[in-house]
Length: 416
Ligand code: SF4
Image (cartoon, rainbow, N blue to C red; front, side, top):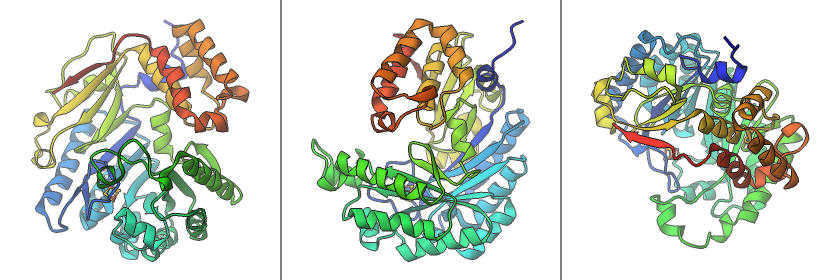
């Protein structure tokens, strides 16, 4: 029998290498946010029941053998820190799986110094704090609930507790000038964080900003030139302070890259737990998942990869009956999985992985080489097949080139 390539070993594994837990509760809905999150009262009993259901689902996945060898776990939201003490048993349980990196997202208004110490004691290794800006006027315009001072204090507490700390910033915001943005970058750097993510604000349908600013023309403060200029400025500042850009929006000091996010971008299996959470599994891992979720349909042998998203409501999830949960499902064949992994690889600064390229070449032949040649001629890919600055700026063109390799067959979708 032919030996499996590294790409095949990763993408055909029968367990999950990464685990994502979604906490869909926030103190207040920010004006730009289209994530699966809802403003909820701190004392709402739904949060207790939801946290209990997460623990129940984790036990079932462990029994099914899906967590053997899981390397990273990430608790995102919503605002996981808004769960307060209810978050601790979840962190302890995830830590008990022996993961190498265990991250929780947090917001400054719900992260006190005592809480951060308890999280560290429970096994958390990393925190990702939603700062967005360190200008109070900009924060108010975004509908953020915290002040700049609270954000900087929370960063400082997390660093002092010995966690690896990431700060999330956004750019091209209402009321933000180049100087305000630059100050935000410098302010988070001054707290000695080891990772920074920077995203341009997107005006999404169905949000307060979508209703206020949506339409044909972007407001002047969100102009694509402003977005590009601020992203460039962030790169310059962060790179002169010992950070490197390892993904289009992510900067880290050496050794502090987010291992969990890298799993998403390198075709590893990951499981999503909770309302609104997404997962991506090989055929073998998906079949194992069906022992916990028998309502999921069996799949044919020509399916290489399954993407699934939990579409249950929060009260349904909080009831704890796994077999009653709802999912939307996408089925990808091998060609589509390869095209998807090439697209994801194009987000990162490392050259495209040789094993992925070899598998793609074996499946796609000359069409892959033609796509690569076009990308090089257009300056999107450079030396050693690493994405260029232009490739990042014109990301959609590169993604399209790779996704076209998936061929004509439509992705099959199902809902249960
Ligand atoms: S805190 Fe985060 S998840 Fe919650 S509403 Fe604001 S942006 Fe959305």
